[in-house]
Image (cartoon, rainbow, N blue to C red):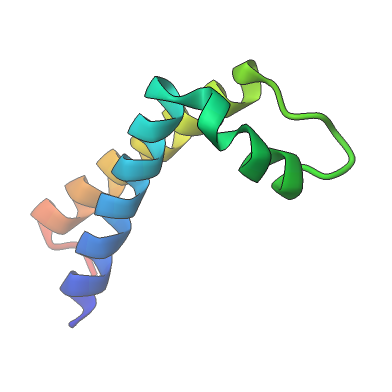
Length: 68
């Protein structure tokens, strides 16, 4: 069951990361709400997308190695 949750987190990270890289203008309203005092820009959306992809790759490596 833990592996299922980890797989779901990997998939969600990849989905949001790729969506942020391909369609940053579609995610701008979400980031405007999340980063309230600061204005969201394409640069911040792209940086967060790359970080989400990196996190999902780290979680996938953890899933492959079986580290608990």
